Length: 591
Image (cartoon, rainbow, N blue to C red; front, top):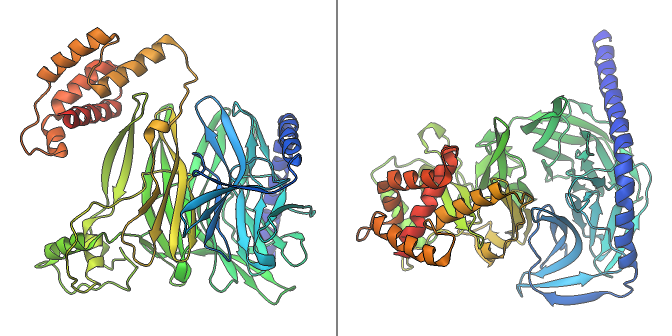
């Protein structure tokens, strides 16, 4: 009894501390939120003037991140709502609503009277009842300069059968937050975690709330066991039996000292299980120790629930702190978690027939008889020590303004792919070889699954201080696992970015970087032409039948020296190397 009493006191003490902190944050952010409430009210006044539903066939939604995309419970449609876009100077929040028809491959913008106000980092869940409903909770609104935040605690439902929005006003719900997670578990919506932030303070949550779809009422759960630490942006999915939810990963930060914050990327897993009968149920947290190959630590990943009780995790970013700078490694890999077997495995694409045959030929004479599990569980290996790790591939995209954007991608190891191919029989091989198509590395994209296909929209990645926001759109057949299909292609030239800094120094540096990437162009047109001619004569020539990687490797020293000369002695080695590769590539492709 003594030990139990101590534990209970400790839990109550932690709850009191959290409550005090929440009160403190709430007080300080109240003034900020009051300023933004007037702006939000103005949006709602404009929306209130709309009295009829207007549906228009339209191009794909504009570039955005932290929106929600959901599969219609009855139709072959996807529903995209809200999101955020930042162009370097101004933050835009959306409350537009789009429907994507999978069979027709077209988008329709639906303007419905009295929608929720603009937001991002909210949660949306579809349920089949009442002809189909889309439930939306929370999220955040930001001032145009991105310095003030308003965190919503409102609950909305979109009635899909009648195309009407309804604001559900039920007391006792979660406090205002964003970055939380919400899933359907039997006949209730479960909300976990999230964060609330103001200019000076922030707080992360690990509380759990339940909203009954029968009684339209909120209740705060008090699970026993050891709960996950407070966090936002985790993976949260229902168990196949509907008796619980699984939580993986997420992000949180703490204040180490005044004006110094430390972020934490979580990679632990928990099960929240329901026990007992309806109305007398109890909840229990327990830690999970999955087998297989877990994703490397990251935040900002996208997640969705796939067929056969498998949760999907795509992309994300792992931030690396170097002195006073913060650089992120972005991912474009796919991982699957089998909720039945409690096992992680990488989603390795099979490619086309020609590629398979080449891999099988390479496999012959090697370790034969090594079995894999079932079709679809690519990358699950019993002898992980013998497998090759993922290969990092670097791609450069040059935007219209000359900015060189380097994208890091992780290609799964050859051993993983070869073992997966052993599961299939020999097939006739008539098709020509083609490289695999895949989304670029990114975070904060939107993912969902409908009829065995995963859909991925938008997101962002960063290059230095620049944010590159996407509106490309992909699908992947989770049964075939052959390759991504491009539904909307990314066009780097459409990217808008307005630098805040207008100083001559910054402009000169930017011009130097652009000039380096383009082959040392001059400032004036006449000088540009003469310099280009001279540079072309001096650059190492491309040899006959030489590939780009071979050329970059052979001339690496030359281009690194030229990059260093253009960027100056204070340039970081990483940046010099990136620009050098881009310069070599531009020159190679011009030949």
